[in-house]
Length: 258
Image (cartoon, rainbow, N blue to C red; front, side, top):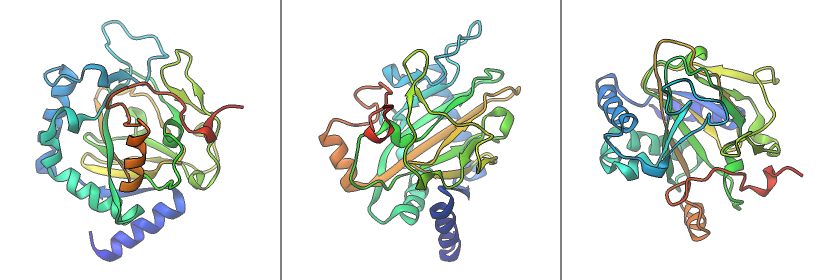
């Protein structure tokens, strides 16, 4: 990406709270990433308690293990991932979007199997995170399959990153969190992307996605970055995004319900 293109992407990110960034995984590398991803899903690469269900508040279909499979810290569970091109390209992008002090905070996989049909609840990532003095953060959502509305591409609310965090509450089973928002929200925008392409969003941007009602799978790999000093502060306070404790709850005081 040229310097001018980086600048235009950064301006859109700052203005809207999200931006489609184009290809981050080359077509010839996609099968390698998909193979590693599927080894996680099949259990060939063990995820232990880093594996959970983002749709656990909805009853499972017969034979299903999860509605929406989430695996935290795949690069810690399978370190060769860090040596592949995506981590380098995503870090370069993150530094253009939030500053030269950006480092990888954590990564995760979120998978929607065919015909699972369970939406990802609307939320702001920062609601999961502890209070920090520097709010800069970017999550880079990378599609390993073509992502469209009916299999779970991302929806964002334009400009929501400039507003206060909304109150978040536990889902009905208490295992995830959600806030009040919908596709009818002013500024709600659907962002389809092709396999290998990515979209970046700020930590305070409202987002969600539909369930997968198609015959195909929807594999996504997400890498989140923030300033190195804030990562150190998080770790000093015991916050490591599920590396030691994969419990999802409202941690940010600004997102707590009154």
